[in-house]
Image (cartoon, rainbow, N blue to C red; front, side):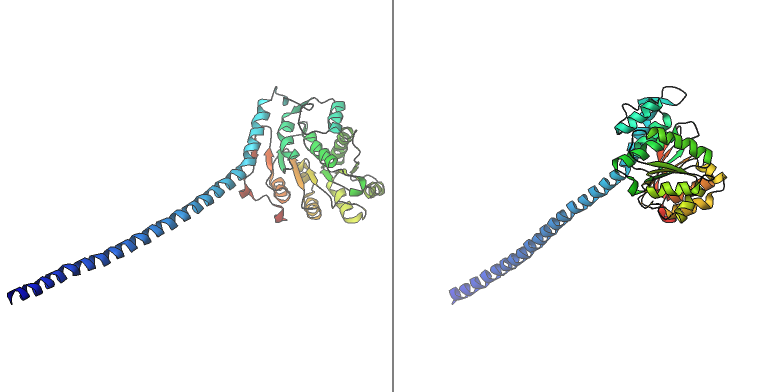
Length: 319
C-alpha cells in the first residue's frame, strides 16, 4: 500500500514538472513571432529610405540646373572683364576669333574696320547668341549697335529667312535721324548677306515703305509711330514670324512720348520671341516697358553683369 501511494505521488510530481515546460514553449513561440514582425518592419523602413534619398537627389539636381545659366553668365562676365585693355572699353577679344560668327558676318565686320570687341559687345554677345533676353544699360557710342545687330543677322542667316518669310527682326529707334544712322550700320553689316533689310520712319513716303514691306523685309529698322501704323494698316506686312525685337534708346523713346505706341506694339507682335532693350538710363517708364517685354533677362552695363532673379516677374504674361 505504501509503494502504491509513492507511485501516485511520483506521477503527480512529474505532471507538475511537465506543465511549466509546455507554458515556456508557448511563450517562446510568441517571442519568436514578435521578433519576426520587428525584422519585417525594419526591412520595410530600409526599402523606404532609398526612395527618400532618390527624391533628395532629384531636388538637388533641379537646383543645380537652375543655377547653371547664372553661373555661366558670371563666368562670361569675368572673362570679359579680364580682357579689358584700356579705358576706351576695347577688349583683347577679336571678331576674327569670336566663336559662332558666320562668314558673311565676319566679312562685313572686317570691311567696316572693326577688329576688337568693345566691353559692352563682349558682355552682350554671348547671352544674345544663346537666345537670351537682355536688358542693357549703355550710352550712344559704346558699340551697343553691333551688340544686337550681330545676333539679329546671325539668327536670320541660320534660320534661312527669305523675303516671303516676312520680318524676322525689328529694331526700334526713337527718332528718324537715329533710325537712319542705325540703318546705315545694317547696310554695311549685311553687305554679304542675301537676307533683305529696310527702314520705316515718320516723314518718309509711306507708299514706298508699304511696297517694300509687302515684298518682304527680313530685318526692319523703325520708329515706333510709323511701325504701329504699318502693323495696323499694311495688309501685306508679314510679321508673324518675328523672332527678335530690339528696343534701342528706350529712355529716349519714352521721352518722345511713344509710351502708348510701345504698349500697342508689344500687344500686336508675337510673344514667342527674343527681346533686347538698351537704355542709357533706367527710368520708371523704361522699367515698365522692360517688365512688359522681357522674360528673365540678363542685365548688362559697363561694370555689372547679372541675371535678374525670377522674383522680379519679368513676364510677357503681364501684357
